[in-house]
Length: 244
Ligand SMILES: CC(C)(COP(=O)(O)OP(=O)(O)OC[C@H]1O[C@@H](n2cnc3c(N)ncnc32)[C@H](O)[C@@H]1OP(=O)(O)O)[C@@H](O)C(=O)NCCC(=O)NCCS
Image (cartoon, rainbow, N blue to C red; front, side, top):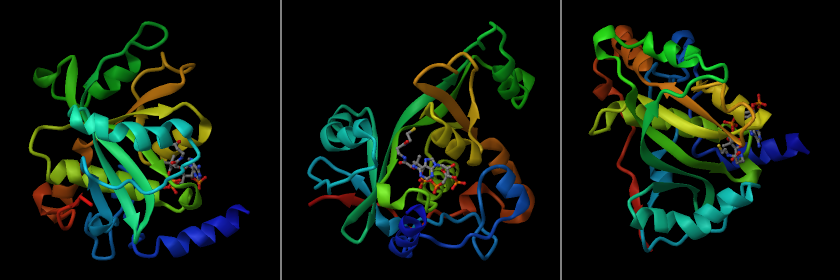
């Protein structure tokens, strides 16, 4: 059953699944390269639509009622209040995935034993004199891939695209990508495979777990591997506005 749906997914995603040419170091920090060895997004950006107030929202089911409902009933309200911007990933007229983004900050949350072990892992990467109690971040508020395409790599492509976007086209400082991940094995595995890490152990028994991805090692590696300033990495054309 899973195999059949994977086959279908592969066919449906032929337009957006680009090259998978892993390069070891970049894989280690959670981003793969294309066939020219560049950190290009594998998500064709003409398939990305930024939700606007008058956008039509195609029907969508990712198997999670809360996420479906957010898209259907709340995404535009969040947009109107400037709380979150939602992006639709289209394959022709079919909506294959969506995600929403908001500004965030990564703040110290003590571990369950009262220590700051996990937070200190982050702090060690920041030069002493620059350490603070919080750091600029962007939050993936919602992320859902339609049921037929789950497991086809689309979720990973979206995360890769975001990593590149916030290194190259961000107009404000942003060190981390954050997410409150559903606390179930598969969702946590998905984010871990994409190099997201836990912020604290204190939310182990909560419905969601705070996770983060550090953009700095990726930026450093890009420079080391001769790809120059992160600005040279392109995310492609501008995203279209989703007007009717
Ligand atoms: C979680 C989600 C966004 C991942 O996107 P995806 O396109 O299915 O994931 P990818 O194909 O890029 O990666 C597959 C990996 O993700 C994990 N995964 C998590 N949920 C999965 C699902 N429903 N189906 C398949 N893989 C899933 C698995 O570890 C899988 O690796 P494996 O194939 O080695 O088992 C998507 O499955 C989804 O929308 N799920 C329902 C809603 C949800 O949980 N959203 C996250 C809210 S924080």
